[in-house]
Image (cartoon, rainbow, N blue to C red; front, side, top):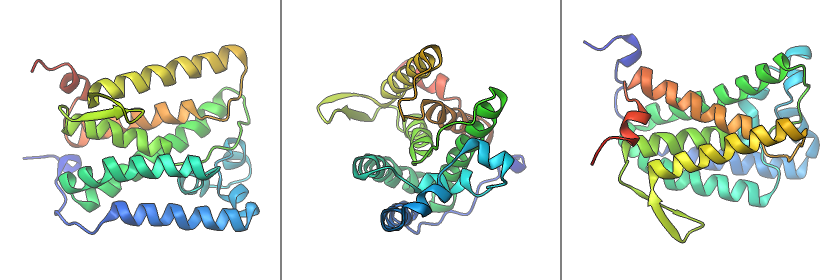
Length: 214
């Protein structure tokens, strides 16, 4: 008998991936027309705890800094999201996506607070996208991902490479005091929350899947 946290949801399919992409595009247009809205909806770690902007760990996922930013995030959401949604069902997929994105946002807030940093504004769906990539590699470990659209590598290898790059860049930023504008910490947090969800809800350990002998 599965426990409460492992209880399966009724399978349904209602194109949640397309709905998420549409929501991101609508918010992108809104913040382009009204930059003030982008400031209100972006994740500002110090503001969440001190000013009570409690909505920001949710809304930041739907705000992007420019066309290139939203294009690549939505491309990844489409490529990985469609297949994951068919595998999990729309409700489970949406729950996983929001869990990774909101969890990454909350982690960003509290780590910045613990470190005594106000933090620069964070925007974008990348935290949730990194979670999607982890789930995709866990459910489809033999799938190939084309790096730069050219080099095909197994999905678990791609996850490991992306995680390694994010760790190195986050370490470099901390050591150098650099603020590149890329939220490496948020990306890593998205991976961490995705790992937790897969481990607890599906009892899938991505590390074991990745290193399982073929």
